[in-house]
Image 1 (cartoon, rainbow over the protein chains, first blue to last red):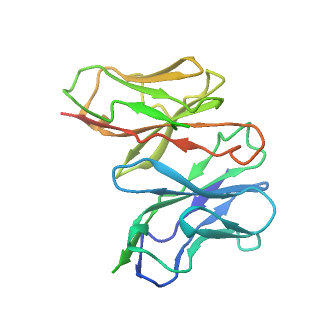
Image 2: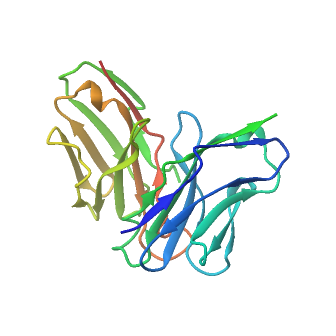
Image 3: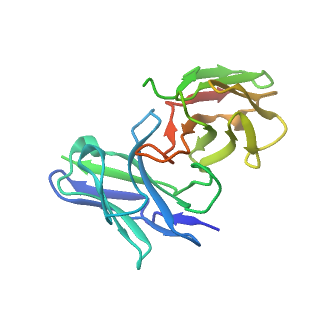
Amino acid sequence: AQSVAQPEDQVNVAEGNPLTVKCTYSVSGNPYLFWYVQYPNRGLQFLLKYITGDNLVKGSYGFEAEFNKSQTSFHLKKPSALVSDSALYFCAVRDEGSGGGADGLTFGKGTHLIIQP
Amino acid sequence: DAGVIQSPRHEVTEMGQEVTLRCKPISGHDYLFWYRQTMMRGLELLIYFNNNVPIDDSGMPEDRFSAKMPNASFSTLKIQPSEPRDSAVYFCASSFSGVGRSGNTIYFGEGSWLTVV
């Protein structure tokens, strides 16, 4: 079985400071890892993904995430936070060998990111 | 591309009434997903289709819920009869199983906000 954990319900960061939103995962095979962002009253928007290759993945809005196989982590980062980054962030994982296409994606419970002016 | 299109965006209905939610996936995508999001349970996968065929409906809460995909560009999620506990945001999402930049990534619609009173 695969699972993903977002250990923090909420992360508070001052504007201009670096931010990190944590995610750890568990899969039996190789992971496909994703980050999504949800703004209030909106759908989930795809930010970035790791499939294979470089461990550092760059995505939308200046976000990046680092795949760490030994720590089974895929933390989301941004060097300088903006107030507009305040939203709900979801990490998701699927096992490379789980079915076809993108079925079998498991989402974390989400982390509220609050950027304080 | 217009993205995943859902309707209605907001629906308020009385208990016992039938509710039909509609979805148009991204053109060319071969997977379609229905998710439900609530504060208590987070994001739940209800059912998904591959090439218009239902693959896994184990997340459908009970027989009052049904979903169809008559063709590659349209799907419905129906609740009959509706109950107050069905109040939630229902997301439709789609993905493409092939290789390439967008492969294996699930793209979400803006959601249908359902309130059953």
